[in-house]
Image (cartoon, rainbow, N blue to C red):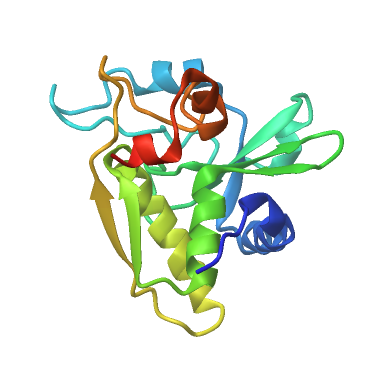
Length: 189
């Protein structure tokens, strides 16, 4: 067992970002969330259907059209030509070219490189699995490996009011709980 911080793997994330960009597996997008929401209105065919994430608007645009923006989102190009499942996997700063890998990108790469057979994630991340799976498959195909990862989505741990408990939730770390009289032993009980 070991702990690896995603930030320590930035060079690998960047290396594969450049390769994916050159291969056309990702594409630039400057649509705002508001623009995406507006474009999606009326697309779902039934009231209970899962709405697509994106209209595919930027899928065929040339990178040169993005010079007037500060940052560019990069979307993973799924096989569906509509672009509706094309998730954002990274952002780059137009002036500096600096890369900010997204959650899907970092997890897909780290999971592929880790050679895991099982992944456990919370159920709120189930929708991310399609993109992460495609990224894992692509990364593993570069070495001739097969993506044989199984993913289990578990329930979320929530606070008494139903909001999910996450690393940004205040007053949940041991350092924050010790002054309130909690001990590691008391927390285990």
